[in-house]
Image 1: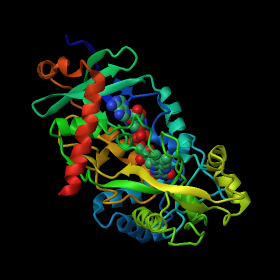
Image 2: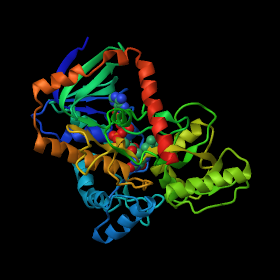
Image 3: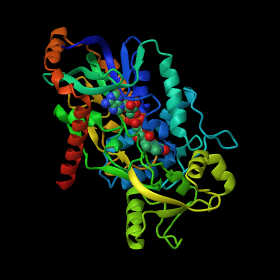
Image 4: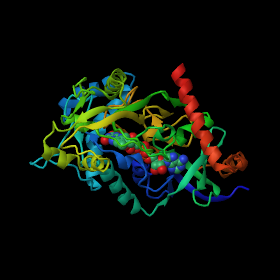
Length: 436
Ligand SMILES: Cc1cc2nc3c(=O)[nH]c(=O)nc-3n(C[C@H](O)[C@H](O)[C@H](O)COP(=O)(O)OP(=O)(O)OC[C@H]3O[C@@H](n4cnc5c(N)ncnc54)[C@H](O)[C@@H]3O)c2cc1C
């Protein structure tokens, strides 16, 4: 039996920065449903530590562009990079208007820090919890919107499609396991990354690339799915669960990497993929499960002010960063590939958009430059919201009925097995793409 709960103008799947910013930029007269798989705070957007890039004046353009392209091995989409960099001051201004608090210099101007791959300081930050600051402020503003309904603990299982158009989603209430069809004129996939399919990842475990997997299932184009970023420095731990990230800005502020004999072995500020490969080589040479990160090269005052969460977490794992080195190891961190989307978030399926880490508009190329992803997610989600508003066209009721007839509820009767299958299909697709 197909239960058609409600019809919306737009469904947004995901409550990270991408989903929330899309909601904020859709017209107020549109009825919007925003769902997320767990609690709203369980998005990677909340975890972002380092910060968000901002062009530091016109004279910074060439250098920022070159840093992004160098990190991405020049496989980036130049138009997307240009659009992102030129729009970055506007994105930050928009966040300030929403009440986001960034660190300031003594003269009141925005402070800027640096991370690997950047040739100058251009990253706005809020202590070491920039993501939480931005995402919670976006959420506060979305909660004020009367036209947006938020449904947490709800999992999108599938897309409802007919004749090359998307007519909404099949969704499951996590607690009751009840499955429903929810129709919408437009659907935005903002499902974040894929870390949950890896044993060691900095991502929340629930982020299993469902948006990419359902896109693959329906023949929606995906790009670069073999491009998976490994972060060089997560805290080494024997415990199960999400790997704790030690932000690159720690190295940006002067922390150094040491081998088993406490000697430096690489330039810590190279792009992520290079530092990761240097660490893995060193671990193999030394026969160790980790290398060391020494933060004692940074002034105590700076560590206390800039990295309080990292200090606290390391202490909870038994390491006092002011007195000793901490063990670090690379782990899966970010997905540069995803559902192919243009600069307005449009995918190859009509009425289906993809934004944030779920999409691939080519901005990151083969490897993401640090602190470019909050910016990218916010900007292209904003543009998707505007694009839907500008071109809004209600679906034909009859077509939606046909689409509903395509839904086979038997597929979802064992939802755990179904979700496992989505994960495995994505893993296989990534494996195949790597072997090409
Ligand atoms: C530890 C860490 C530190 C980081 N630091 C930085 C940084 O300093 N700067 C930077 O620019 N980037 C950073 N990143 C990357 C950045 O945080 C993410 O790329 C970005 O937040 C992605 O936003 P998003 O909205 O696309 O996805 P997310 O914020 O991950 O949100 C995904 C949403 O989709 C929902 N969802 C997923 N699947 C389903 C489904 N099937 N049904 C319903 N809902 C679903 C989830 O519940 C969640 O609400 C960091 C990432 C991590 C993990």
